[in-house]
Length: 121
Image (cartoon, rainbow, N blue to C red; front, side, top):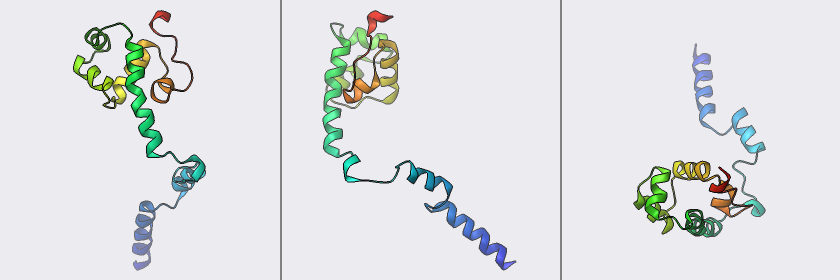
């Protein structure tokens, strides 16, 4: 009986550690590694965050914040905060991308083309 208790304890301990098939697959996928060439620095993240308000304003174009907010189903205050530097919530970004037909990759990182825009609907 003492052997079984030990093995149960061992299995519990192993599930908490970073060994096992899940941890190995995560390591194989590059998760948890931080090579110098692929490290995302805080400076890079901050630079991208600072450009999001500019891109939001570009998507809004000549519409008022109020009408833009109504179209997206949020309060005008949220649009104002996001255009002034507060990082938008994921649900807002997804709604914006779907309703305005724009690329999240462009919106968040400036990569690629903005998308087709409202006119393509």
